[in-house]
Image 1 (spheres, rainbow, N blue to C red):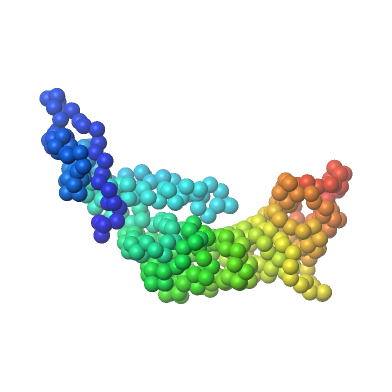
Image 2 (image 1 turned 120 degrees about the horizontal axis):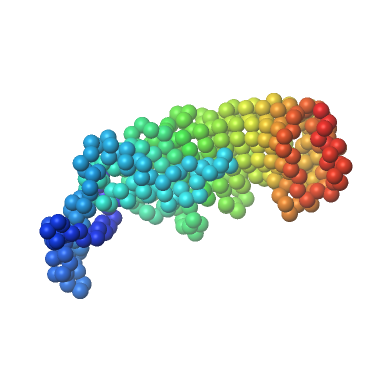
Length: 381
């Protein structure tokens, strides 16, 4: 499986100088070959130079190849860039796609480094790849990468930036088959602009997805056709969704503690709160649409602590606040800075009072309220 990761010859290091003043044997040999190269070297010449570059890199390794393989593997792990999300509102760090290539760079140094890297499972637990249904090598690339990860939890990022490409059915099936082979070990799944029509192919080969903890779906398709994402056995605790309706995301919401979801209708917000009893943080955009029942019971959610509503219609927001009770609410933020908000502050006062919550942070953008109005909201419990 050394076909992946050695796409070009390793770049030779600077020439060394031995105690006697001359170069080492590897440096001397590669210098001689370089001097003999014709102006337009053949493929054989380039391959020979690449092999010598590998020999040179191995000769210049001061300690990796002298250390036990466990120590060498640990050093390689420390060389990886940090890929922890910057905040709880991120599923993946911003440069995740660039950083995951680090194991391939280690493998380019020489065949011995490649052997160590290829046998270190922790280097291969994170992968980001463009969904391109015309790259015939991509399914094998994914399969070879993930097989090196042993049995460890996986972070998967699939993205597409070529909207004009028409899917090749056989290659698309092969790509998802390679990915689905390891779906029982998905811990983080990030789906970015992959055509919604292909969602059904995810995780179709297994019913075991209990390891999934973070799910992110960004649908940038303007197709009016209703899109559905379904992994019914997934029990994530962190969910991010863009441009996909709540009713179209079929997962188990029982263990979800964090949700960032835009373009929800009011009744979908109520469904989310009802189906996610452990929810502690909700960041939501509320949009018009749907029919509200004429009669209703107030919804009590005992765990929600942090609520940020960043997009809304004033009238709908008043309806929302009128129908919920949040006893554990600590932080409330309403609206981006460019909004002009005309929420009925008595609705807020009523929410705080009947919830009995101990608000610690309260942010409201672009409001017309006076200082006295705002002050009257807070000491109401």
